[in-house]
Length: 256
Ligand SMILES: [Zn+2]
View (cartoon, rainbow, N blue to C red):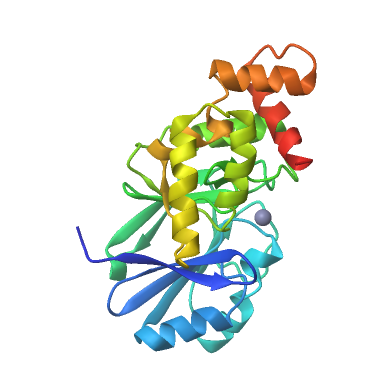
């Protein structure tokens, strides 16, 4: 193991710009604004190596220009989305070699939130943009429920120990919804207490892990009888498969 760390630089109201760094170099994921990144790099005396982008929404790309105006660095991002300043366009199967940090990230296509959304993953970490949140998932803006369902399935196929770096502090409000879907889920009840405690102490609720999400995230639990039952009650019609359960709870959450 090298001594690489991942630090949440806060931006806007509830965004995290995950900064992967060692003692000398850093890479940022989804810099929606530049100043918090510049301040963090300065405070740690870090040299910015590259920018990684998961999708085109302004709160994920807004800081690119200021950061690249300061120094000429590569900007990695999804091939099928139009994002100014991307220098390396990526699709699933590509990888990003960050030799100064001694790490290589593989690219996964995870459409649904946006049409060309990608994720970056290695053996220990997943940077999933706005696709998977702790106890929730992203809104489906450009894709379809089946597409989003399959993208999330791809992420949950990763090892349970994978740390998941979501880009918003939505955990507690997601838990409030999940508790309505699964009121009897003891793991969820415990998780709510843990997250409340962390936030009360001004800590970040993230990263989460794939293994933990499988026990508490209703969007990953569409095979569970209680989740199916909640979806049936909500839709007032029988739901015949996992994707319909997923679509029902996603549109339920949209109105929550
Ligand atoms: Zn987004």
